[in-house]
Length: 392
Image (cartoon, rainbow, N blue to C red; front, side, top):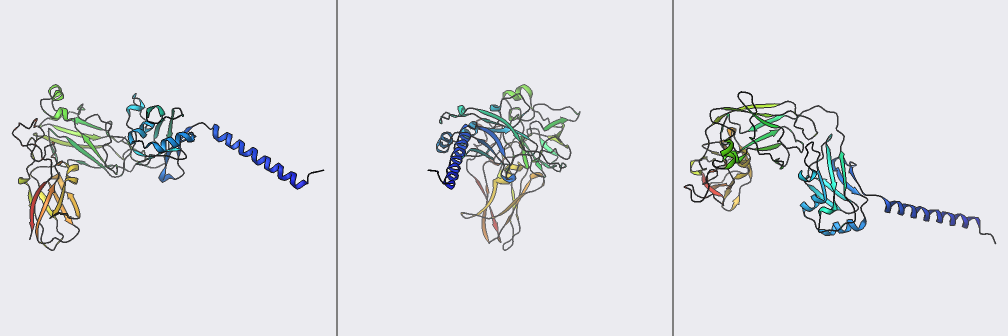
């Protein structure tokens, strides 16, 4: 008895589908893990390890790894031309997930035209046992054709004279910069044109603000602070009465991987060391008028650290913090605060956080050069200092 023609076609169709499903399953299971850069959404580009066994992904999703453990497992960093191993270069900050694949989203977008090294190594995380083997890849986003547009807007301190025991400088840019730090891009020259060596601490630590528009240059405290080994061996890098020129190289790449529009140079005169603790009794507070939104202005007897000054002062009334906007004046010798609402009659407090420092690291009640609590200067304050003023 012959099978009807329609039934035969249906049987053949079922067999073909079954064969395809088996083939797909076989292909999926045999796919080797690999690292790729997903640029489907340019604003949410991420790195992905695809092809990992389902058991590995399940184990990772349940492991509750710490940020350091995630970074050890999937280490992403800007490709370096130095001889240092990948493990010695700090990993990029970002977010990880393990669902259909292992993914890494950077805290800041990848730079076009830059190369990134990616290492996946299960052996570096002891708390989770994975069957996958280690992988390494270099990924990049093609750069777009554009002209340099980012420049150095300001270098702090903004005064022309700096103390010979200066601890920090800040370089502010006109637009966001790339991931590179300033170790290879900020140099110092004396008035004879010779480069001054070993001025800056050779750190690879991320010293950018959240927007990557301001970079902190830390001068070596070991050379600044007296009577410790680097200071005894080499002395201070800056010397009173001389001049020093800070140079920001044009090659420092911005967020698009492009150089700056031009090299930046600025000369400072080096003044005497600042070795006295901060004293709020020497500050002058000019209170505003009741019923206005005029600023309260606080004037200091010497310049303070620009970066710390921005986040160390606020205004309170009773137990409440006053909403408003603070700003740092030229040469960092005054600070103003404009409230969101009109001033009320009565007492207010200027709140000063204990981290505030001058250009040489001196804090309220404690000088940078103080070595122990047995010295003449009182111990450093651990709590905020309150400076009263009255609105009339």
